[in-house]
Length: 254
Length: 365
Ligand SMILES: Nc1ncnc2c1ncn2[C@@H]1O[C@H](COP(=O)(O)OP(=O)(O)OP(=O)(O)O)[C@@H](O)[C@H]1O
Ligand SMILES: [Mg+2]
Image (cartoon, rainbow over all chains, first blue to last red; front, top):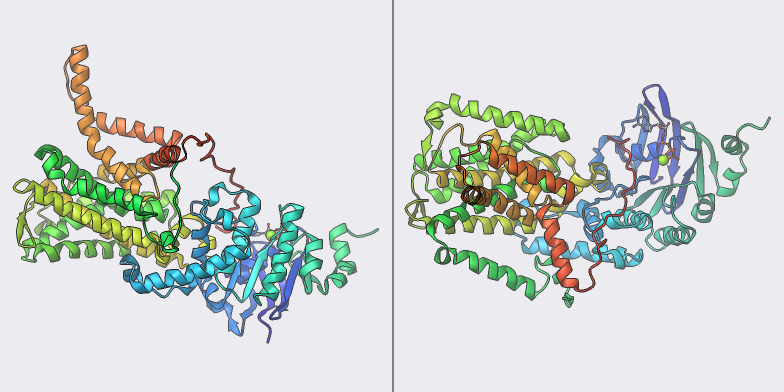
């Protein structure tokens, strides 16, 4: 059984078919990349998995569960975490607080015990922080731990988003263009981190990325899309040399 | 320059950073408890008023400052708390039970009202709550048999731990009662902010999409926030009723709602301090104005006739000045001044400058 399965998923925005009868599955433990020109529908696929949109047709299953049965806020509970292409951090909170929100799905205390900060609330807080501090160490965010997001540079925000997603303790991590806007060094760091996330933490990664160097460096399989539909699926080398992909990127050779 | 040394992880979880900070707050509390000995009855009354406004401000701060839902209707919840409390007391319920229950009732009504309001954002939510505040006036008049309608109601003295407490008869005890409520509400608020629920409020305020992706249920969170906010506001309303002694349908008008919202904006949205700073401004502005009016009258001759709407006008101007020059409110200014002292002489002018924020698509809305 695959970890994530999309089966003939279609989504339309008015007259525009953003995702067109798309099927693919992500196996446990792999790094799976989605590539494609702008407007191909890559982010829309992520938003479908996050349940922000209801597909027009098709099925989405995660770990055997029908994802279409859950609310957007229920997806995280299965162990799916994500980042956003246009950074969606909690701007007026510190890095630490942002990551702690990532622990929300593990919340066991109720309103009353939190208002009185009972011993169980305190214990939970310690556990949450232990996990979050691990993530901070892993992604080298110590220097920014108590800084407000609103004052952080772009590159750091990108990393904080990954950190927040990791804090949820996910099985599947969705990264929407993790390297866009990053410098060469930052991209290299991101590459090692993605590798470590998969190898050390055993987290499956599904990512959208334009940087082909990063894609071929870390991913096991690549899905190429254009206009919402599948063009090619295979190893990075196979996809890069696929005629349909070359055509989609460079236009039809006359 | 003061440096906080971290020697224990709990320092990050505890509400105070170190012993120095804790002792400052304890000192403040001691000074506040001793207020009846260093203030005359008039100013003690004013201070009580400020504290009651601070409770109301804390109530609205939960919803607007921390969850990002603007409400122009919180006077309605002040009214509900006030009437619920007095009606229960008149029915023979001891005050020590009636008071918390009045808050609970207000909270439950607030959470119920929240359900239709959940679909509304920004200005629409503000209009919805504004309408609610206007409606409250009519509801109180229509429900005359229980609310006393236009004739209003009088607040009787209430029993607290066997003492009879009354705003005029025993101003000191009434002050301590109010201070006690302030302390409890503030402690609860602090605890909330260092626990998952409080952080989920902030998450909803700053980005609903990513809050959802982190497993925060938006409508549930907003409903709880509404409920908590209204509960605290209800307590403030109950105290306001006791403080005023008499009240009717016009006591909790829309103007109070607007004043409350302005108050927390001036104080500083999204901080507990902000509610207190705002309450101080709201509470002492009338005094300050009347004193300065007398002064102006004395210096330039001329009469000291009352100018209608002067107070509100000045208040509005202060609000505009803050929005333009210090959007973080008095609390923001306070932080800067404190940092200046703590870092002396290393403060840089651009220390609080924000990084330009990057375009955020509204695609997912
Ligand atoms: N909420 C929406 N309403 C209407 N159209 C949308 C919406 N979201 C996306 N689209 C459209 O759907 C198509 C796919 O968009 P999507 O964001 O998935 O592209 P993408 O592959 O992520 O592109 P990029 O590489 O630029 O991020 C685009 O044509 C876009 O304009
Ligand atoms: Mg995209």
